[in-house]
Amino acid sequence: MHPRVTSWILEFVLRQPVDDWVANGLLFALPLPSPVPPRLKKTLLLRRLSSDLSRPCLSGRTLLSLELIEELDRSAGADAPSDSLAAAYAAVAVECTACFLRERSDDDHGEDFFDAVNRIWNCRVADLERSEAAGLVSPALGEARREMEEAVVNPIVRVGLMGRDTKKAALDAVRVYLDEADKEMGPPYLERMAKAVGEEWRRSSRTGRDGSVVELYEILLNLLAIQGEHGRREGLPDGDRAKTSRFLEFDKHEESVLGRDKDAPEQGGCSSDEFVHLPAAAAEVIKMKILSRSGVLPANLDNMEDNQDQMGSNPVFSVNEGTGKGPYNDHDAMAHPSLMNQGPSDLEHVEENRERASLSFVDKGTKDGNPGTSTSTRDKKDCAGAPKPSLVDRNRTARTFEWDEDSIESPSENSPNSSNKLHFRSPKRREISLPLEDNKTFIKRRTKRKWSSLEEETLKKAVERHGVGNWKFIKSCHPEILKDRTEVDLKDKWRNMIRQ
DNA sequence: CTAGGGTTAAGC
DNA sequence: GCTTAACCCTAG
Image 1 (cartoon, rainbow, N blue to C red):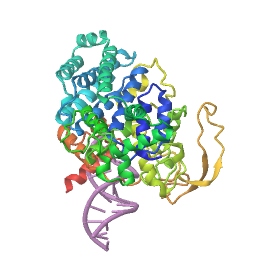
Image 2 (cartoon, helix red, strand yellow):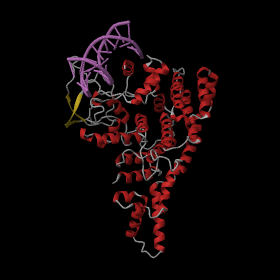
Image 3 (spheres, rainbow, N blue to C red):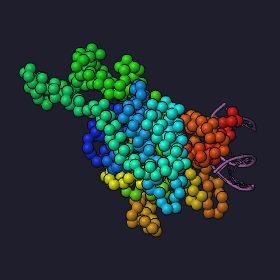
């Protein structure tokens, strides 16, 4: 199936009230155009918001989805984010901070709240103000920021904050934005095409044609040719493609969806016809942002998080980091079971899957979008940006091995949770050439990974802002962008940068 | 946790 | 073989 067609199907399915895990499964099963069309990306992000709303579970992921939507709209030529988007962002940011006050334990003296204020308002929102996304910084957000800063030093303000139902306010604001966005997006492309075919079929029936299935198919091909889809693939002359402008209204509609001037450059637009690309830099930012936060795991893999942590701490999964060689190359490869056995020649597909995984909207382990979970422990981790074990972190207690695909071991029966956890196949292991530390432990250096310009720029700005030597703090301020770097990496990189 | 020296490997 | 960037080790 042509990836463009599958993207239409996905867009249609994502707009339907199907379970998240079904839609997510389809997202991983269907081939997609590369890069993923902006309109489909926006549909996925809206669906993620909708999913957060239905559970209901607002978190840093929700905040990120709103940021990414703003970025997509801006890339498509929108002047400024809508009021409802900015309002939703402000309300979710407040909730992501206030939730730490509600969930304080006895031994917590407010550190989590203070940390959240610093992370969300002093770092994230402050960065937003200086970035191109400053349109999200509404008066309401500015006011909320002042309130949060005041709450840090004033217990009375904190009590006032705890007394407000910030969660309901945030959910309402997101709901308002989603309703508005849904109207702006209009019906899915397939739905509009089906309607057009129906109308044409009825019209042709009235003019004496037989109305058969064959004729219906001809009408569809004709419409596609008019829209340029069929024309491009079949090489029809331009005159044939444009013999009527009737159905080109779709494209005009697509442009109006995101408020894009039809004369504006196509780059970044969300035309369903073109599915044009985002600028490379924006795409990189988006990729880096969503990769680290998205729920990338297939919904039917329960207890995946535990297994993921195990993998993250096991050098086996970092040996080929970035090379695409390892079956469990990273979170994203795990997200797609069919990729687990791929070799180096399939790197391209792994990369493709990385982007696909980045767009997944289902939380880890969320099979049915279980409701009832509020900004809970999981959110706490998410909001707090608590560093998960990095896939590239070294595990000093583990040995480093290479997969041997020829043999498979049965799952360990000694594991305390062996009956509950999903067991991945554990191939027979083979030591690879490594320096010997002692008689029992092998060491493997992490795979060298060049610093991206985004990482470099982030570090540079952070040092200007927070000073040299606060590497741990700088990393905590930018957990997404610097997720693959340790504090020592930051220090080393800065040393290299100032040497230049 | 950070600083600073050491090691590794890629590129020339 | 040299330079450099990325990564590692360890004292304080």
